[in-house]
Image (cartoon, rainbow, N blue to C red):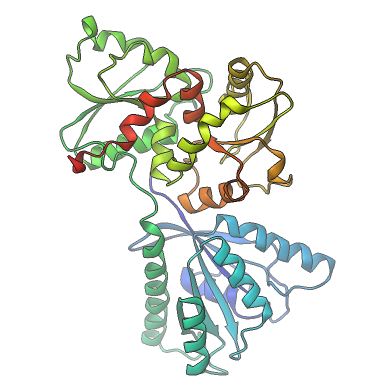
Length: 409
């Protein structure tokens, strides 16, 4: 399944954000009006962009909105920034005000690549001096757009310009996320995927990390065998690697069971840990996970789920992992849970540890933005797979395949 890139159009009221979104999409997705504040909550529409893949094109409320309702709209825009991969910041009349400058500061903090567009250029063209100043100050592309009075050819050229700028901005973030098996598995390798089908498994399908793993193995011309834990012993008769597996990947919650079934000389890891490496948080997780041993009575742990789902009595994040923490540490611990990309309303420094899910539903940029407050404040971070492996005594074994690069031999 392809990753979805979030592209947000941001600016003050009546700068032409909604018109640009409609122009790019080729449809009237957002309401366009001369009345300030027409766009309230962020509006998202899906679009396929060649060179990127599937994208969410997001229209946002004006960052200069006023009044009690306007402040709520502006707050929504700022809260949405943690989900943004690329920002298109629009201004006009060659006036880059404090609103735009404050927004650029926030986007810089979140490491979001930005394209600055001068709108309403049919009324006033972008001054070359202003363009040069902004480009040098913020180290990004600065261009002008006009949507009025265009011929069909001019309209096509304007859209191609906008798309080329977006693809260029995307190229600056693309390298942050690895493919799941990049540098680990080569063409012809045989990989065993252990996928428990229990009460937590979605009806009639595999979970996204398992699907992504199969697709990535096919992409590199490796061979995948998919089984449930009960079938694993038959694949290693007398403890021998008869099938020649180069790697075994299991669901994290089956670690303890599968570890005892797979011979010690065969690399073993989990889907969650592969995602940690893929999304660039691996080193911070490796550093933070052993801090589990330092937990004390009364410590609070923040559990971060990147998606919203129905929770059952066997939920991995809300039930099983907290129970494992308490059993392993013997401490009286409390847990808070935040789903999706909802705001964390508690001071992050109040937590002794942050435990992130695999993050299959978010981009590496979104995951980093989610964890950055904890990392910046010295709060140790780990993820589901890392924590489960550590508390089952197999951390070193399951981390080892992820730092092994065949290309380095």
